[in-house]
Length: 238
Image (tube, rainbow, N blue to C red; front, side):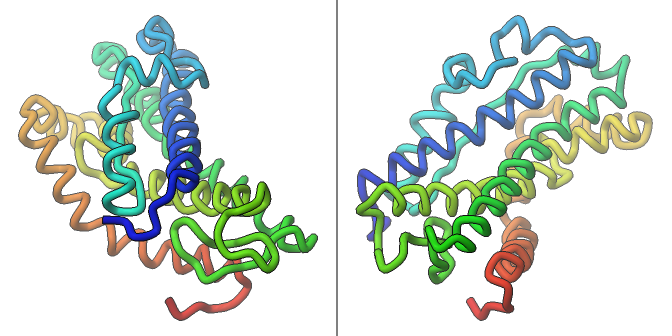
């Protein structure tokens, strides 16, 4: 159980999680639309309105994150934007760009949060805190999130951390993650056949997520250390 759980932290986390995931799926959908696939557009996913995405993935966007946050202190969830496999097979490079668009969107949000934190710390509106997923900065002299600036500090902290995690996790080259789809689009003859066989068997998709979950700490740990070092302007001993 998360000992630091509070209703305020749940609200901040969920708002950031929902926006970040919606932006990720919107980016997939709009790049597919630009590339000639109208499947997601017809389903309403070419939108920053979270409701079409929630209707498609209610368990992954509502139930799972709201249940896992009180348990772990961070949210587990998922969503997807539909596409036409025939379009992907006919236009593999466009498929690769569509697949890359989601992680790229998370990287953009992480950069926005990083820049906002640097600016607000530079002006004295926020100050650095000991880094955690929810707490990279805080309102000056304030522990917790009792003020609007405290809530903003938490929101920016979560936005930076969560979007780095979403970007890197989705880039792992294991089905059903985006990294596998990028490889499939770039090298359809080599990787495409292999991944297509894996996608045809749901058990392989589950296995891919399990393997990714085991590998990911070795990827995200060093990445977050580098980000924190750049953010704080010094090497940290976490």
